[in-house]
Length: 85
Image 1: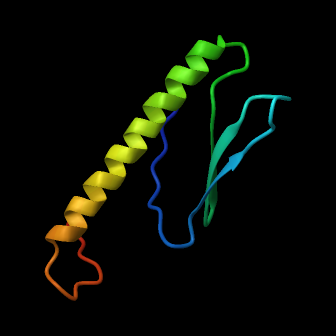
Image 2: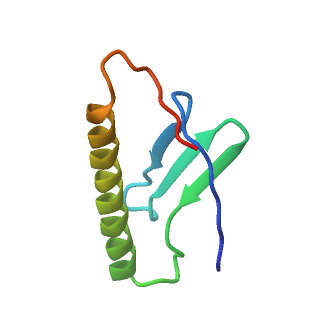
């Protein structure tokens, strides 16, 4: 099922986990003004696929955080926001 979505998170963006314990698979959600994104793997997929996807997602999120931190550290002092277009 191909899909493509782009959004720009801000301080009001909410990232949360729907954790159902051992009853069903979890769902990661991103909520913002005018959108809601659910992230999971189809129930029909083997649990190993769910685990592999979650590991890739966690690595990408950690890499994203590190990149944002590097960028923020390189900004001039007292700079609130810098936009490059």
